[in-house]
Length: 363
Image (cartoon, rainbow, N blue to C red):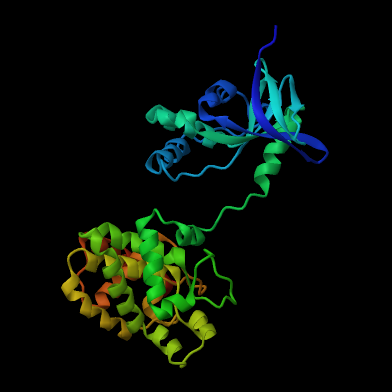
């Protein structure tokens, strides 16, 4: 005697193959899908190995956004007996699947695992549903190809556009708000891309400011003042970064700004974020010192940036050490005392520079 699962479903066709879409109660997930085959070699699996670190993050998203979370469909292959019973309406009917069948997830294994984790914390999820697209399993090779096809052409959204659309991330909301309120930043900030092309009409990315604001947010004692502080700080910066001001006044072009100055580089924006963190940490009263930014020489050829922000070949040094060293120089120009860690990094940098200069002299 055979026992069957029966799911209301819609039948479709792709590449001359039938497939079925059904809304499955979350309470059925643990019954339909076997444990992930972690012990099996990759060449014998139809899926990648689970990244266990991702699962609690996704589950936490569900729990914290219980009334607004969104999940896309899972895709699975049926390895076993099934048949579709048409109703009076074309392509609508009931998908009957043998309880002896095996279901293989082709897309969505982390979502499935996260849902099962979330259900352990909130059993009210059990009666909610998720769409599953069912395909007929025609062997391991086909299942592996389906996994490849479903994932190969998926494009991860840029951080910038994620931060533009995210209404749950307070820092993302505050960052895009402050950018929109400051004319210069709003005009030249790309809100979709994380990387700008050589001929881009923009100078910054939203993600660059978001990352810079992380340092400010972590130092700000009164989080309710985030929007006010960010506006005051970045507006002051935009009024005192001389190359930015020169562009606004038509004294230089965007091409000249990009090619001859470092004032729009990501490491400089990150360094300004560290400077903002200093002011956010109870130093509001000294923010007027920021007007000394206009006296800093931001020209690429300035010797002060050599090996601090610019390599010997003229390329930008894009790492956290460079951000720290650029921040150190800015703070020194503004008359701000460096912290012990900052001073240690500065001493090490200068020591290395002396060694390099000595090596050049010896040669």
